[in-house]
Amino acid sequence: MKRDAVSDPSTTAAAHEAENPDINSWNARIIAEVRANAGYAAWSSEAEFAAGRPVPPRIPGSGEGMPLILVHHIGAKTGRARISPLFYLPVGDNWAVFGTHGGSPHHPAWYRNLMANPRVTVEAGRETVPAVARLAEGAERERIWAEEIALVPKFAEFEAAAGRQIPVVVLERAPENEVHE
Image (cartoon, rainbow, N blue to C red; front, side, top):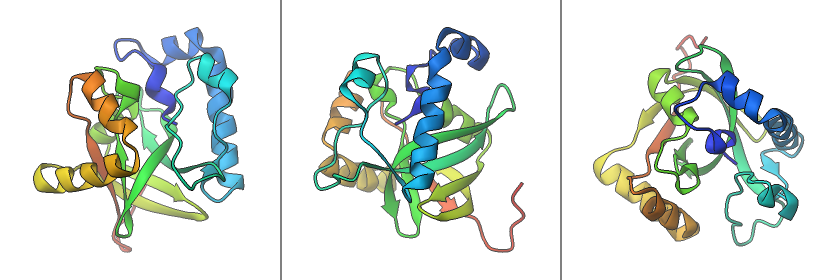
């Protein structure tokens, strides 16, 4: 689900895109599906999985596909607009997203982007709202992480494989009167 999951953080986005020309078309397909299906995309095929596409673990009871939000953000290094389809956990009226990077020892690019440029736009189902990203820490992070790994135990395996604490980022709805660019 995290399109950046195959990127090496030591390379530029342009170099990654040049090395993986079909990732953009795959990402575009996922974004189109999420928009057409009110927040869901079909589970990746076995062929996509074999090709190294980041595939989130299946969630029991979610046969209609994987629930995703589309997070619009700005590249930390490039300044380019990006859209990342991300698996999420509802947190009240907000969303928590998880920088698992498929168990990589490196944080995903979208995480670095959100930490550098926290003002984002979230497409959730048929709703599009401005939001602000912040890193969950301490007891809040532990509570959200425990809830997530109870739903998706594979995420605990990702954290163990990564050898790092998986960042939990909360995307909070921006106040109505806040100007969002």
